[in-house]
Image (tube, rainbow, N blue to C red):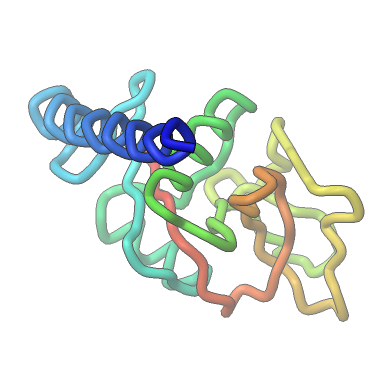
Length: 158
């Protein structure tokens, strides 16, 4: 029983030390502004508060980035891990939107279909034709669609 109680504590301490190191090593002195985390030449900013999709787009723009557009599974797994260690629950908005309300989700930055997709089974559902913005469910690491006014966490990318 003692092992079970110690293991989560050790994991917590290791994660906190890792986050502290990342924040120091990857802040402004290595190409990312303070508060952003560097990974493979890109910088990421994780919000503390939930916002609607439009407010998330504005938040990222105001901070010099854009809403996360996932390029591949490795990036998605890394972002999901970062969300989990920050205690995020629910979802994280990603930069894809069904602008024409026809079920075709396009990247906000390019207006093209994303080359990488990870929709959960049965998604995008466009439930009642009211779900036009994409997000990642943190607990499954799969994509879903939702109403754009729903508050979710934000990940910005430079």
